[in-house]
Image 1 (cartoon, one colour):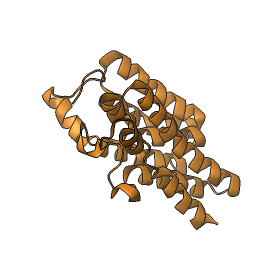
Image 2 (cartoon, one colour):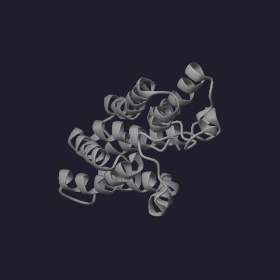
Image 3 (tube, helix red, strand yellow):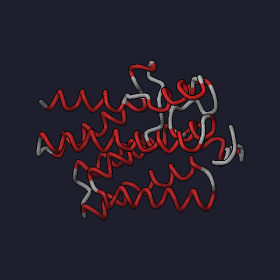
Image 4 (cartoon, one colour):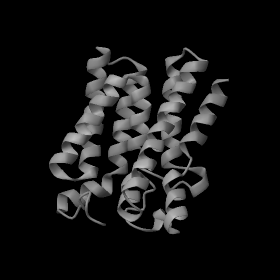
Length: 197
């Protein structure tokens, strides 16, 4: 059962929502334009506001549902964590798109909303605050990722816990996926949310 949960979580995460929306609405391949990501931000810039919101909600749902399925069928915290990271892996490296997907932010949010809604909402709050102040989605995502393990530590009250370790791994993964954005931010070349890349 555990293997089935993990496999299902990966498949759920790998649903290429942004790619399909781009193809269906504008007949474009998001992997070849803008940031090359199939996530909501690239959808926003190249397809539109409402399609981007739809993609964001679905991508959040992928992470949330994967963990909730694991929680329903098992009481093992480790399986919940593995299910969540499997969904994130599917989102980043979808089998249907030859491993070229999104950057894990929305799906990661869904995962942590399921593991701890307080930590998930705190991270979302940081994202929205930084986005409001700077208009940089990448900086907002990185800021939320950096603070994620800190929020999880305060929620748990200890370091030695699978939730803390996975929050650290996801934070590092999100930062790594934004490495090109970090270079552009340093050079002053990063696009704001209302600008095309």
